[in-house]
Each structure stands twice: as structure tokens, then as C-alpha cells.
Length: 212
Image: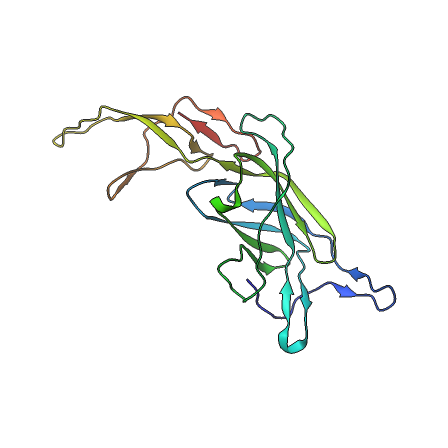
């Protein structure tokens, strides 16, 4: 998504014809985890020096945004892996196109839309941002991609409507964090679980756990 305005941009040196400008850095990502299937999630990157470049003639100008790539470094067990980087697509025309997954907000913030079509494998990812001037910054092992929860058993599967019932759900990847937990929906009712058991730590510094 592109909006033209007063921004600090990379500039061309008159003598060397070299693009000068800041080196990007990323030091925050929110939320720190996304579901790699079923949902399209929007995450926000925070940092500094996230500088686009104005290209084209004055009457037909556009912003060339910093490029964002995701590289998986660990699987969900924490084992190291080396995968090819996945480029987050940014369609420059028309401005605001639904096919664009990258939005520049300021030199300190960008947002990304990550959906199933991106093909993220479950695991922990580096986030690399490259400005149009070629300068690059990486936020190492900062984004976790998890599969959707699975539900294999409901016990009991017959409830009495005249009394309180305790229902046990069995499955995997019921993901919880320090201040967050999965929710259970019955028709139009959404309930928080009374407890989560058999939890294991997921890789990364966000402190997330997957429970069964």
C-alpha cells in the first residue's frame, strides 16, 4: 500500500550515482506468532530506518517499499533448519491493491499480511528488511509460525443442559502465552479453558507453549 507524503528517502549521489540512505533495523514484531494455515494475519514490524524510495516522474510517482523476507531457522522442536527465504509479496500498482501484503507506515513501522498462500512451514523465522538502497537489517528468530489446533476427542460428548458440565478436549497446538490463551467456541458462545495440560515450550523468545 502506498501513500505519498513527506518522507525521509534514499537519495542519489550526484557524483557516484550510488543510492545513499539509512540501514534498516527491526527490533519488534507484534504479534510474535501466526497460524500458517487457515488464517491471514497482520503483523506489525517496529524499528528504525525503514526507508522507501520515490520512483517515476512527478505525475506518475510511486513508493518503492523496503522488501521483507522470512527465513525459517528452526522447526517446532527447536532443531536448526536452513530453508530458502520467502519474499513477502508487494504489488506496487495500483496503490492499495489487495494483492499487496506490505504496508509502509513510517520509518519506524511497517505492517505485513501473512496468509496460507505464502506457504510458511511451521517453525521459527528471521525477518529481513532490505531498503531500496540495498542496505539490510535482520531481526533474528523473531516470528513463530504454528499450525492450526487439532481436536481429536471431546469427553463426554453428551451434556446435560440442566447442570454445569466439565468437558475435556484432547488435541494438539492449543497455544498459550504469558498473557494469552486459546478460546473455545460453542455456537455463539466463547469460553476460556479452566486449565491447559501437557504443555511444551515452543522455540523463540516469546514464551509460547503448545498444549494437548
